Length: 138
Image (tube, rainbow, N blue to C red; front, side, top):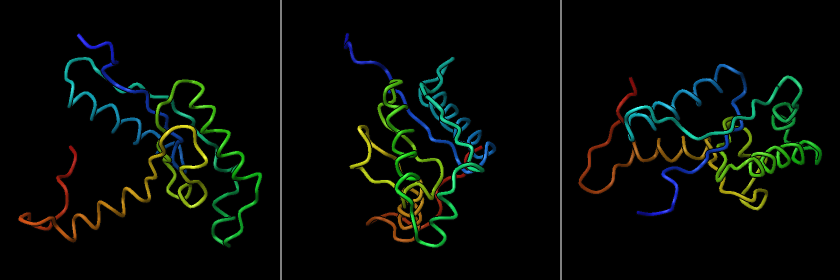
């Protein structure tokens, strides 16, 4: 029997609002339960950022990022990694404009990039497959 854990711990920097953070949390857990069955749920650590206090959105709108804004986001990722996260989902799509792989000690999952790649996969199917949207979740 392998000593490797069944599942890695996922870090999640919440979305722009608590409502979107809740959606990410629900989808992560529903997907884990669907794949593993039973009482399984995602091993995850959520950092729900209060974006009312985080000015990066306004900075990105005018193309000017202050170093302290980026440093705050990097600190959040490092905190999640210290807590055991083995990868971090950037739940707010704007964070991918601010951060890159070099800013993190663990893999980052940039939701803006994931959305864009899924849209291209839908528009340009692989050889032998039909174009179309992925199946809707329940």
